[in-house]
Amino acid sequence: MRLRFSKMHGLGNDFVMIDAISQKVRLSPEKVRKLADRRFGVGCDQVLIVEEPSNPDVDFRYRIYNADGSEVENCGNGARCFATFVRERKLTGKNSIKVETSAGIMELHVTNGDEVRVDMGAPILAPAEIPFIAPAQAPSYSLTLGSEHFTIGAVSMGNPHCVLVVESAANAEVERLGPLLETHPDFPKKANIGFMEVVSRNEINLRVFERGAGETLACGTGACAAVVAGRLRDLLDSSVTVNLPGGSLTIEWAGDASSVLMTGPTAQVFQGQVKI
Image 1 (cartoon, helix red, strand yellow):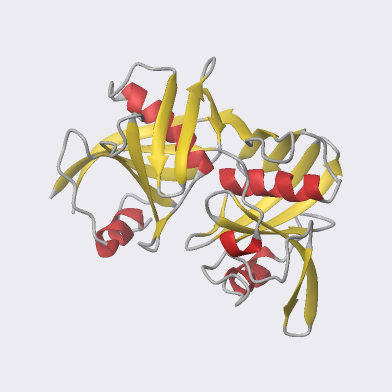
Image 2 (tube, rainbow, N blue to C red):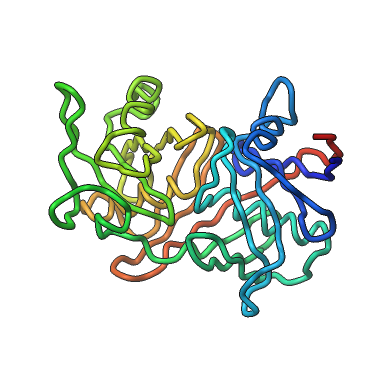
């Protein structure tokens, strides 16, 4: 099978984008892993597939595969790249695009230049829906890992997130704690782990260990989850600059049942064909 693809990134969080509308695509987890391999494949954090929608009220279906071959519910940086990709491939000329994901419907808005604004929907905070094991919903929770105890935020942005407040994101123990907390039994479907340093009420530094991918240069849903977790603990205001290793995003959340809005850039690296 020979596939046409584009390599794109959002703040260094990189993707292999595949149009499954104008070409036949059959990807198994093994083939996803081969595509994502940085030595023997194209190399990426995630593989994103554009498909025809099953819902007549939306423009596209959007599927997301981690580098380990697992399919996941949502990806904020990928959503921004998705909007740029379908316009560059002339699959649509719209500036506002509705896409369906396994987590629900998202609205993508292409703004000036290479910026894309994504309506990520309202955060999911009920523990059973994240999913996270807790007796009741709370602004923060206690989590035990061996002899260590952490205060965390638990949020779903269509995918589960665990957010820790740290003194320094640069010095956070991401490599050690990331994989341990990702598979913590209190997160039945595993979790993305965010390490958030609060700079001010309008700015944070953030590193994210992504479920099934490891630490990435940027994580859009992780940035949204961190701001929500910070707002719930009254650490942040409604508009926050989130500085990630790959660059910065603007995240807005008014609270309660309002949508989380994410704005940031995208970039195409190259196009090509691959036999797989």
